[in-house]
Image (cartoon, rainbow, N blue to C red):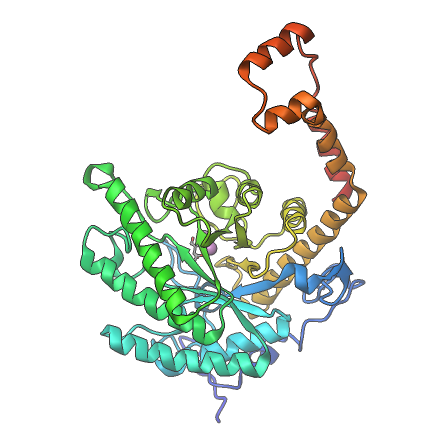
Length: 458
Ligand code: XLS
Ligand code: NI
Ligand code: NI
């Protein structure tokens, strides 16, 4: 095979080579090593993430279950509403050909191998170009997923989840499962059927529904009740098909409050939990929480992770972060040690995320146009979460915070407090209680004390 670079406008834009050659050319070395003592400017190595090291009873690899997303890392171009693509990859000839899609997939597996990440995730339309009919599209998808299966078998890399892109094509501009036109809804149904077939074929551990354009821009043209009922009916049919084909992965819904629609139905964790309970679906789904979506909903980073986990509904995390000062989904790599500590504390407390994982739904900035930046971004985030894991384990093992919380609620261990929680202490008894005991003594919430303790571990 010829490795001749093809020039366009003076830039090397594309050349055909074995996957490892692209990374060798970009001077990324071989597999990313663990070098805890590496120099400050050496960002192409792990300083904290040591896959086989045991923390809190399990290896880091088992707790962290990292996953690389195909759409940003291998389909991201750096284009934004004001600018053209900036991330021109030498393995991508810029066409929609099947050959290009296959080359890209091989490169992606090489990337995962070098990074030491065991999982990936994709939308159907990321890995395979769309044909002009459903039949043609599915045939192309079969060809690409045959290759994905072969690469999975060769490398041991697994599919954390796949999902269907039900939002990019013009047919979905008014939504998919909440579209006012049944014909469009049926198209989405056919697409999800194929998505589930692929999930089964590739042994996906989960299947995600992110409500792309399930929402509205104006209530004036929208029958909210009917759309939500249709969404629930759609999920019920997905469950029926899942059971029929014997796909055993976990179904996940990913909340997001806005973007692309003004109001997305899956607004945040509590909204989705309420929706699932309203329609009797709560035993069949868990949540895939993306912190950048949580902050878009006006909550802080950890809010939806904590809420979902409290209701035993946290299934997986799209571990990214936003800019606290911006109102859109910037999908940055999580580099904040404190947030990652809080995240890993929840993960440890609920006994892990499996079959979910920490899926990097993140993109490098459009200015970060070196191939090495792709590695550095993932390494940096993996190291931050590894630090978070270590700090969270220390917090839990020391037990100081949990002891303080137990003390804060100790009045509920009194006979009256316990009776109340058991539903056996009436309002009349409350009245008697207060008449006997008088005014409660004010008690400090001690927020600053708790914050100072957290900082001790960071
Ligand atoms: C978009 C979502 C999307 C889902 C997968 O904001 O995060 O990328 O994770 O469809
Ligand atoms: Ni996401
Ligand atoms: Ni997102």
